[in-house]
Length: 212
Image 1: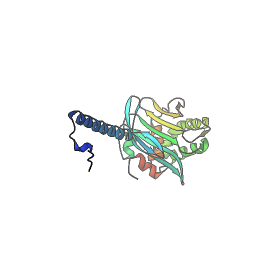
Image 2: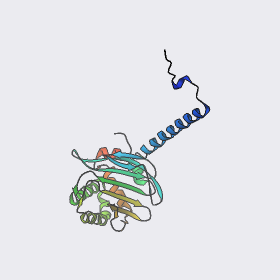
Image 3: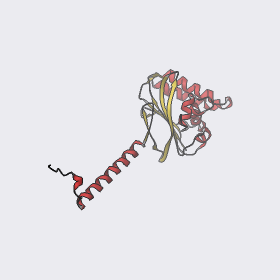
Image 4: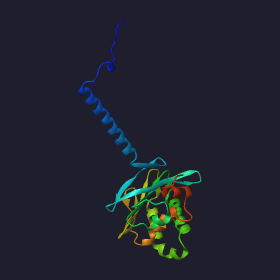
């Protein structure tokens, strides 16, 4: 009978053992790196949101992300960035530092329809005695939507609150004019999603980082 030795039949040399250990260590590092990379983003509606971003020189973390539905149709994916994580609307509205709302369209929608969604959301979540202070900002916001005839799948809208400056709206990487100076304007927009009558209750829970 012919004996065919297998690699395990012989002791590994010191050099071979070292190579094996180094290879195992490299594989482990690769797995850790891959794991870290996979956790650097969060997906909602097929859209990836970075878990950390920098706004006005400050690090913000993704508080939560989800999808806005109208009936059974997906309208956009939304993400909320804050300086600290919270699961309550009150803290999200009052926490200090820059804030960002990111919307990425999941279907085509004309500017009039999209503008109405925003205006209705503000009206449904703002006390009547505060609406008068928001009128100038709402008029400007309607002009922003009018200048963008249509929002198409993949378009991204950023709504940034920058302390000391105001609220900026960016559409397709282009800032839409000067900042909205009214301090209450950003929170009025944020209440569209986190108010008592949110645009989408499931999206509200998602933005607050609560499990669905």
